[in-house]
Amino acid sequence: MSVRDGPSAAGRVFEDLDLAATDYAARIGAVTAAERAELRERFVELCLPFAGRLARRYRDRGEALEDLEQVARLGLIKAIDRYDPHRGSFTAYAVITVSGEIKRHFRDRTWGVHVPRRVQDLSLEVGHAAVVLTAELTRQPTPAELAGYLRLPEESVLEALESSAGYAPASLNAPAGADGSVEFGDLIGGADADLEAVDDKVTVSGLLLRLPARERQMLAMRFYGNRTQAEIAAELGISQMHVSRMLSRALSWLREAMLSDTLPRWEGASELSDGHGMEVRIVRAGGALTVLVRGEVDRDTAGRFRTTLRQSVSVAGADRLVVDLSAVPLVDAAGVTALLDAAAAAAAAEVELSLVGAQPLVARVLGVSGLQSLLQPPG
Image 1 (cartoon, one colour):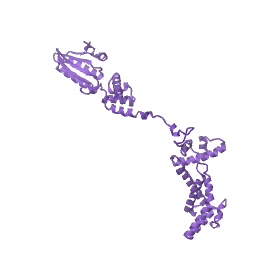
Image 2 (cartoon, rainbow, N blue to C red):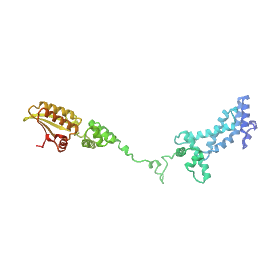
Image 3 (spheres, rainbow, N blue to C red):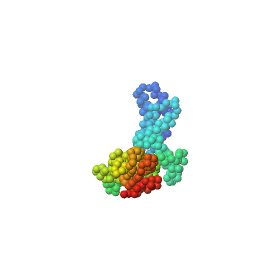
């Protein structure tokens, strides 16, 4: 059949499109523009039933058949305008071009949610395979059966099945109640506890900056590093009890600061005269040189404490040297070392040294450290 047979040829069921395409390509090169347009129109009309059959392959997939036929006809025109008879069969080329145009329409125009092209194409294949297997098995096929039919990994089939929900997602404004007064979006979600805690987190972040560096370090190690008190004590070179007291003091201050409009007083190192948790004064009276200590004697303050004690030994002369520990709540290993050093220096200088006013906890620590003989009972 040739194009010259006219429009009546379009009514035939089986057209020899390859022969018609060859005849069309041979004739358009030697005619005027008007004649070329008429030949093209006749050839397009001849091929319209062919495009309709390709469109009907994709019916029942959520798109109107009329829309699919329009897309198929657009692909047909592209195939006619681009066809080169030296490169093979027109029918084969038209099938690829029209099918590609229809698939592109599904991919770009019908999906409600953006899904990668690979997954979109795979979703179409899985949907077609599901229809075939449902007819054969008289039941819904499993993902494993679909994967076996398509010769694909089961994970790919599951991905395609999951992504197919993005083709026509449900509207959040769709009525969900019996009377239509409730929308679907009203039934999704709930109170976000993390969102409600944003204000508290911001407030705590600002308050943490007002704590001394050592307290901030301990809080970070405990609650962000998930370290135990024993691990913190070992790393900082202090006792676990000291760590527990400092953490408790810092947390109590943060809790009080969160609940009050004004910052509470920090009963810690920042209020002492030197900012390092210890205050030392030296008083000479009644034949004694007394070193008055206030605050915690730990790794941060032990160096200055030892220097003060050494200087006191050197200037004591004939006076007794008394170290008043009544205002010291804690002495760690570094503080004990400073006192042992002072005891050795006092013995070498033949200066009488005594430790007075030690609180029970401090007294026990000093007693087991070899300083029991220097301890004086509370007066």
